[in-house]
Length: 194
Image 1 (cartoon, rainbow, N blue to C red):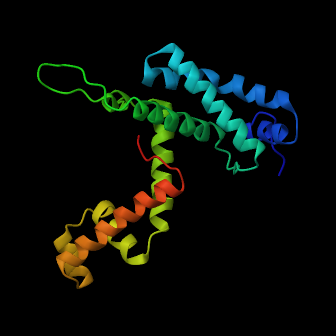
Image 2 (cartoon, rainbow, N blue to C red):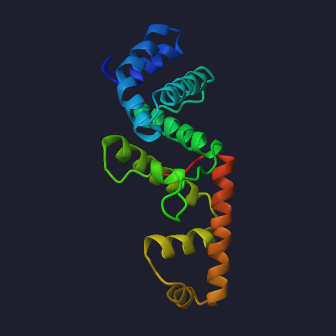
Image 3 (cartoon, helix red, strand yellow):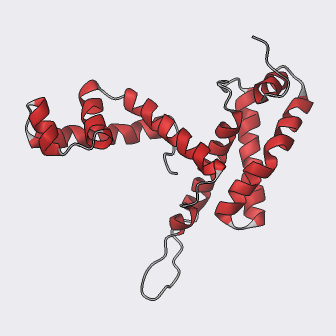
């Protein structure tokens, strides 16, 4: 199958094969979307520039090390890298306290955007895709209980009855499923924050 020069994967392939200008083309093609997304979250041009540069440094490193899996999703992949770097930025700053009456203000609230921009849709899709892949790595009993509880919205009582187990067993399996999901997220360096 021939790849059209209009597709990102054409330029990714060209860059991997040593054509430096191909990466410059990719960066020029997507920089306004990526930078705009970053800036919309951090609200500071200097910080946005730093995260933007870190994003493309990570992209370059991954491409040069041959660790990029081409699935025709170059932009969503880049957006996810920038999203994770934004999360890292806010984590480094920990919690910033601002007084709003007597309430504490958590900086993480700033990055939860309720508008459904194209970038948010891309990231949301990637997060759900990542979550699905992680769930598939769980042991069958944990996978089953997680699917029934979250996707089928069954109560623990319903799950216990359907699986002919006690509620405590159902709760225990759910607990271990969540613990194992966290371990898998750390192992695969995946952030499931939207």
